[in-house]
Image (cartoon, rainbow over all chains, first blue to last red; front, side, top):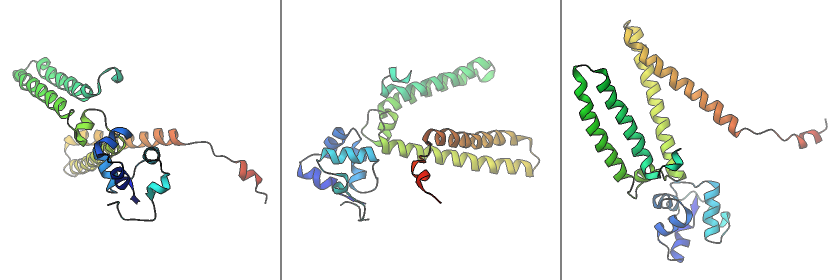
Length: 69
Length: 146
């Protein structure tokens, strides 16, 4: 599942550690989600989408099997 | 009770308690090997310090040891424990089977471990499955007329 977290984070000039702190997860988890190696839970997916002022379906694309690069 | 203890001290605290009990066991038995309690105690102190330091690092392991694991780290931990339990069960089965084959009297610890892992699994299924189960909503079912 592809996601736009890295792209959105870079647009806002946020580091992975800053995003992790804002979401209440570890930096390693942000790295895993960005690279598509970990699919976040529904509450975390909503928290991510809300943080970037996007909807979940705009943030995560289930049709794309490729990891978000 | 755990909530009153700072997260970073929880795992080292449990380790310290276990180490103290282990050390005390050697001392209480009072035999020739009472002195084993001393290296056991030294090992415990070293382990507690190592865990405390590890708990302060910005790594997956540090987050787990520091009791601040997020959902992914908890999932990883859960999978690791499930794997450890599977291995314990498989090893116990092999040990028990070997003990039966050679008519050994040393098979009972394997049997105990196998029973604990087996019943633990069933207990977990029962507990967590019931916790997640809800009552079915039959409202729409009743509307269907045959």
